Image 1: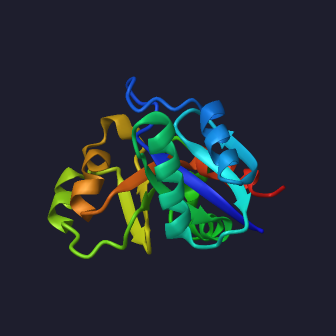
Image 2: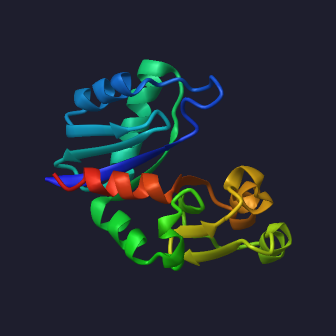
Length: 178
């Protein structure tokens, strides 16, 4: 049995792409997944299944949601070990006590042409960032709502991302330890 974390992008935001977590659980149950748990309404799901192919699972989930709800959300699907590795690789340990300031952006693909000038010009003096594999770490002491850097991550990296604050990342990881 494999434990996966599905991070959905852009669901239940601003009244668009509505997908209540109870309905999402139902869709995943129909796919044969078990031990399904959700965390907050923005689309964080932990589940177990026999399948191990991440791309195949992502496609199955998107198709099932498209069929049931009329849209196919972007999904970053991780194995539990990958989330653990992202936590362990955090370059901003000092920010772990301020979980709203530290954000992990999970990337759909490895970026090939990063626009470093765009990242640097958007960055405030008190912000820091690091890219490690498919994770972009952002320390934004003033919050990401006020951060031009946060608003430019996708465009600068040239790949789709979905971000979670440190508190959410830790909570989601805890959910995998059943």
